[in-house]
Length: 432
Ligand SMILES: Cc1cc2nc3c(=O)[nH]c(=O)nc-3n(C[C@H](O)[C@H](O)[C@H](O)COP(=O)(O)OP(=O)(O)OC[C@H]3O[C@@H](n4cnc5c(N)ncnc54)[C@H](O)[C@@H]3O)c2cc1C
Image 1 (cartoon, rainbow, N blue to C red):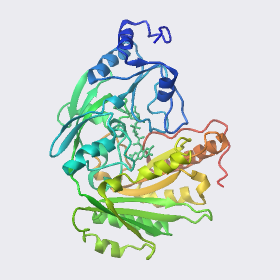
Image 2 (cartoon, rainbow, N blue to C red):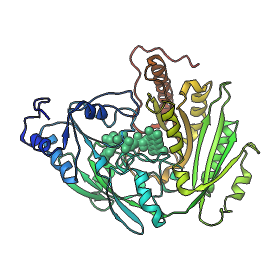
Image 3 (cartoon, rainbow, N blue to C red):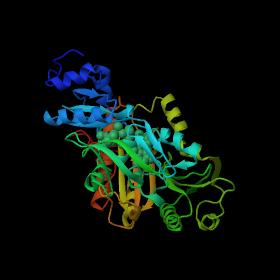
């Protein structure tokens, strides 16, 4: 790499990293690190560090601290608002730190750059699984532990950050520290859901539980939001399904359908324990879709959607995403206000809307800011727009801002960071 491209390039430590082939400032690396899934914020760093070991990260962190330069970890870059970017600083590409260090009867020690699909590839043959998985498995361990990591099993186990036993972290001043609830607890509490600001996770020890081999998945449909939410609350209280989520399905005629998604995991016979709970639900009888799959097929169900979106050219478009935690008492009015009059074009072909509840008491990681009520709903309005169509993208950003401002005034909190703001002077949305 030629010198002089940034003000740090002549420094002895910088040159040492460069000579070892760990620092990159070629256009491809800078553009990779300056962009993310959202494609709404672009801020290339000065250079990208591709460490081989935790010690590389620590040594470079000491250098960055000395130079007062931002140092930001990034793995799969599925952020939507530039969270893993480092303008005027360095990005640490953690993807190579993906080794499985140890696996035991109740835990796995894995590098922060490993994706959850890799974790499962190690644990499932041993009959074990992480308690909570995100809907999409190609996210990194470090990436989801830095935000929270929510999924349909959160109702039972909290978020992924609540299932971590300990972390190896490089602190901003370049110390490599092992932290847990008993050891350097402040660091442990700050790093989980800390968006990479309090240290770089280099490896994580994650709790494992016995895995079933099969899943029975139910999709049940409702026309009425109030009835749908009431059934979600009833199922949360019953706790008999292993997985509980839900979606708003928009239609062109402006009528919404609400889809309850449930799953039971089993190994021999499908469990009978939820039969009573199912019988009491008020979904449209006859609308139900029931599917039997392997446990892994169920967890990996977004892989097909990803393939289709990639083929349709929608995966790499702009993603104005909004993710909120709603207090139970306000959930219905916030969701009703947000989805009223929405049609599919308002969220784009690759967009989706999720709504599902969990017990706030299951969440122990203190950095996760939740509304102060026992039951909280995740509400995600995740839109997709052509990056060439700037007017539509701006309209979506403003629509998200309106929902965000209204919801937070009613006690909601943001998840995955604040949504990207629309450009000043953009026109308010004329919702279809
Ligand atoms: C298709 C899709 C589906 C998703 N589904 C879910 C879901 O079901 N549930 C859910 O909770 N989220 C979901 N997300 C959001 C996702 O969890 C976050 O965006 C997550 O941060 C992405 O992980 P990543 O490896 O891409 O992280 P990156 O985008 O690379 O980084 C994200 C953040 O984590 C920090 N970070 C990354 N690595 C480390 C590290 N080693 N140490 C410290 N900080 C680090 C970064 O600095 C940044 O702030 C989804 C995202 C997409 C695109």
